[in-house]
Image 1: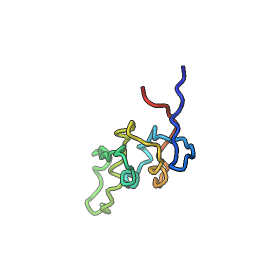
Image 2: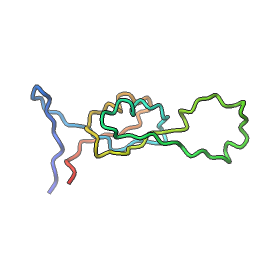
Image 3: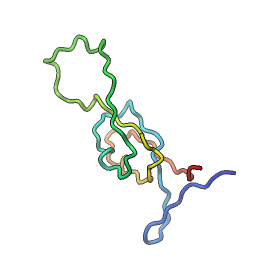
Image 4: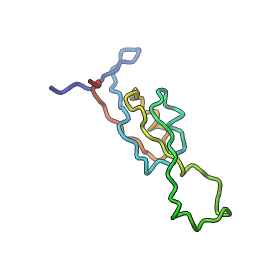
Amino acid sequence: MAMDNIIGLTRGGTRWVPQFAIALDEEKCIGCGRCFKVCPRDVLEIVQRALDVAANEDLDDDDDDGDDSDNSYMRLANAMDCIGCEACSRVCPKKCFTHAPLPLAA
């Protein structure tokens, strides 16, 4: 038996289907934190990328431009707390999120 997707109602009684965050492309994510800031439910967490020391051995301190945004990315930490508002996707400059309607978890 298939479960029906969650349907919401606006205060005015209009039906809408929440689109829940089901995936986040961590490779495309630049770690800007915009999605983290707009999420009302603490669904996301900031994770530091593991730096490949061998690949960075030849870099001098003079080459450091001070931009650390590529050293972190977002992860779906509490996906079951997502309310399907899609605020994260609206602010993501790299279109990292995938959303879908879902049934209530059993």
